[in-house]
Image (cartoon, rainbow over all chains, first blue to last red; front, top):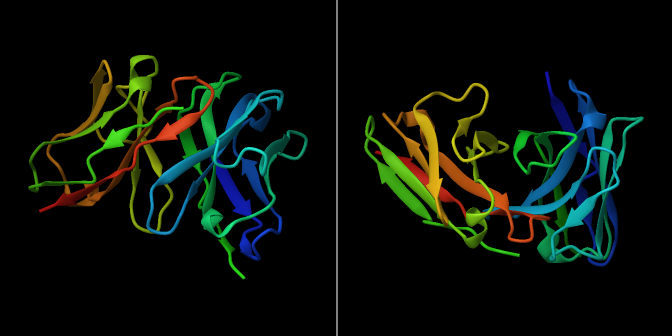
Amino acid sequence: QVQLVESGGGVVQPGRSLRLSCAASGFTFSAFGMHWVRQAPGKGLEWLAVVSYDGTVKFDADSVRGRFTISRDNSKNTLDLQMDSLRPEDTAVYYCAKDSGLRWLKFYLEYWGQGTLVTVSS
Amino acid sequence: SSELTQDPAVSVALGQTVRITCQGDSLRSYFASWYQQKPGQAPLLVIYNKDNRASGIPDRFSGSGSGTTASLTITGTQAEDEADYYCSSRDTSGDHGVFGGGTKLTVL
C-alpha cells in the first residue's frame, strides 16, 4: 500500500533553515508528481509546492517563493523541502502528498503522509 | 493566483442531506477536488475531477459543479462524516494549487 512518511520537523529559530523529507513506498515514485502542503495550528490547508514526476517542472506558492525549494530523488524514492529564512508564520504541520496523475500533474492529492510539525520560535 | 471561498461552518441532522459549496474563478477552467479532515488526522481525498469518488469513499458522497461553483453533497449523513471539508483546484494560472478555507461540518 502507498506510504508517505515525513521527517525533519522540529523547533527552529527565526531566520534559520530546515530540510524536510518524505519517504515514499508502495507505488512507482518516479511516475508521479508530488506536493507539499502545510497547515498552521487551527488553520486551513495551504498548498506550497509541486514537482513533476521527473523533477523537471516545479511550481511554488507566492508565500514561500525564494525561501522554500522542492526537490526529489527518484533513485531513493524521496521528496524534500528545503526551507530557508524561516519565519514564525511558517509554524505548521507539513504534509507531503502524491499527485494522482501518471506522468502528468493533475493536482488531485490522492495520498497524504501524516505530517511533520515545524515550529519557528526563538 | 486565485481564491476558493467556502462557508466556514455547516450543520446537518443525522441522516439528512447536506451540500457544501466552493466558489472561485479558477473553477471555470479546472475541476475541483474535495478533502475530508478529521481532528488529528491527515486530509483524505473524497472527490476528484469534480464528481469522481476516490477509492473507498462511500457512495453517499457526491460532487458536482458548474461555472465558478463546485459542490460536495453528502446524502444520508452519518455521525462519522463530521469533519472539516476543503475544496481545491488549480489556480487561474494552472501552475499552482489552491485550497478553500474549509467548512466545518457538524452532524446534529
